Length: 613
Image (cartoon, helix red, strand yellow):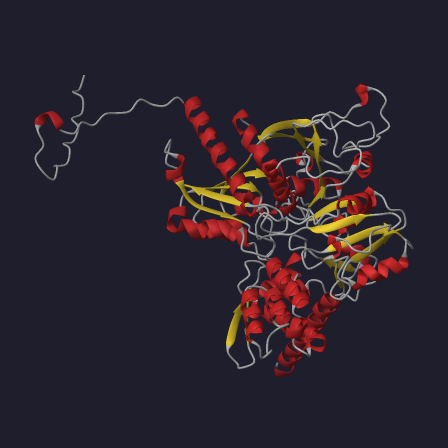
């Protein structure tokens, strides 16, 4: 038997070592494959949960939107979690830079050979696959995805693109099926529950919130309800409002409580306030009619108190009429308006109607350690037509949390939709949402940036550089930033100039729009005098710059030739098409005008080249 090979001598130490401290090379025992796989899955699950937590960081600061989080981690085995993370990012708001790009920029060269963890498959609102290209160009070699995108026109596209670039993509529930991923998958589902419910049921994710005493009363027999719950619980309600597109109450709540329904927790997103009242029997004066704090909509029956409707309109309150006012139709309207999440803070009669209409998905019940009694004292939910306890609705995924002296119980009435049964195969990726069918009617609608043609929106995340009145080129984060700021540009007033800078520095187009509209209401004297006659030109100038800057957007616009473009906002009757097509659709018109100009230029160029030949 040949003698065993002699190990090479260890490299010399930089200074003499005692013999007893001489370095010794030892072979570590091999880790069993089952143990290594389990450990790898445990780390993957931990980083995926972290990605879901990161995705939720914009909650309450911006209007609800699809929540994307990206965590980039190095592949060192069994190292501390914090030491392995090299980059993180989340989508701050609609129309801002994507999570993958932010995480890749933070990671830099450390992203090469690393793994990216995504709570949700990327959704392309740039029109140029920025999320995918960010991961590819950073040198990422593996991507772990919690959920496929629930919107049909986006589902599977990014995954297929990543795999076509040679990147390994592992999807929880498909490539990764260990029980260790159960908690991580739940986190991914919860953080995007609004998007999933909207995609599955075509209504916003709706949460019913109420505060009650230990004997189940939301007010005394007299109707007095201030306050059932404690200060800490009311602070949590402000957080819930900040996570919502809209807050709904009934006419009784307005008459009895005169609420404000603002999110007074921090500076951030303020939801729209919706009052449902069939007869429009509402007080002449109310906190909700002050639209300087937040926007208010009154939903009512067609023809109800037209004189009072006019008074509300004079105060800036929007009135929306329905043939038959009911929770289902109001939720359909909110869906058309692009809402993802709605909070119901109504009384027992309206909450019972909403539950019966199956538009309530989750319940938050704050229970205070008080007893008020009273045979006629109101309860959180009115008559549901149930006579036996076996008919009761059982909440699922129930959780309990003590908030100071109160107890918060929350649970789902309807489970978070599982859209996995309709996952397409790798080579079967839908190019458009068949339910929309824009090509059959020759109409292409766009509104939110996550729509099929969302890159057409003035909220899309495409910076533009445009010369100002002096000829100096200025950069603007989005078309909306430019448009809102130019309401005040050229006004010889230092406050107007400060407003322009405030809008320009807004972190998202949503915030730029909110600042611009609020300042316009507060300081109408600072609006440039020619604004009404110039606003279309301002928007068109910004759109031309955007499409001339980004060639892929021009290609997308030209691909719609022969189709009518409609900005599908149901409430903006100037830039959008309106709820029933009554809007002027100026944004769609300007895009079609720009498309005609580009096609004309292309045609002239082709003819010129033909003559030269």
